[in-house]
Image 1 (cartoon, protein in one colour):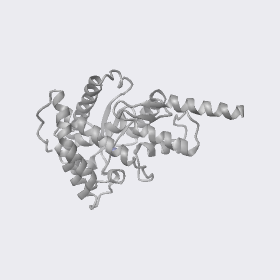
Image 2 (cartoon, protein in one colour):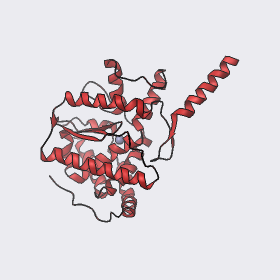
Image 3 (cartoon, rainbow, N blue to C red):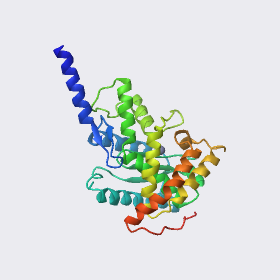
Image 4 (tube, rainbow, N blue to C red):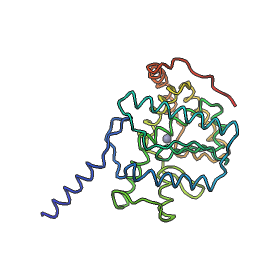
Length: 276
Ligand SMILES: [Zn+2]
């Protein structure tokens, strides 16, 4: 009996300690893995992906990815500061890389490590749409969606709580990639939950507008995504991000709110789409 109670108390304590309130969502979220434990693993994993890939640098489009990423990061910081969350991004080390590979995908690892593949560029069509994708991916990272997914996965698999997820072997690394949607031709990617997707769409749209990009373009982007899913290219991004009518309708409805939100920060006009 006593033993049982101890277990209950311990579990309650663990739950309490590992439920952090996310400033973007205002919700308590399940996070067994802290940023301090997770970020070094993510950074190491990110560097490994870069080492194994053809990273494009110095081109107009690679520069564009960096420019958009920096603007979205600045927008996130302004938004957090305005909401009394100074220091939230202290452990983040933003990086934005373009990998030369013909796959329709982009992702963001914990701590702000972002990859775009060149295959997504023709679907995006313009810089504003890149900003919409960037905003969405950054929103997943800020809301710790991957972390929650990982925690849930760890629970399911009965893995040790509280850490030690350093990359020790291929199996762990593959699991990590799966949780974060990094993907490869071998691995399937776990889709984020529908509520995570809706959240990332909403937060991402605010960031896009706040960074000076017209949020109206997000719905247009998803219409093009829907069209591309009928094409030849393997739609990695679409396997975890269905370009359905609900999403397009939601984004269209949210655009005026995103503009109003941006206006509070003095952003009342937007850049041209930036065709390239
Ligand atoms: Zn997403």
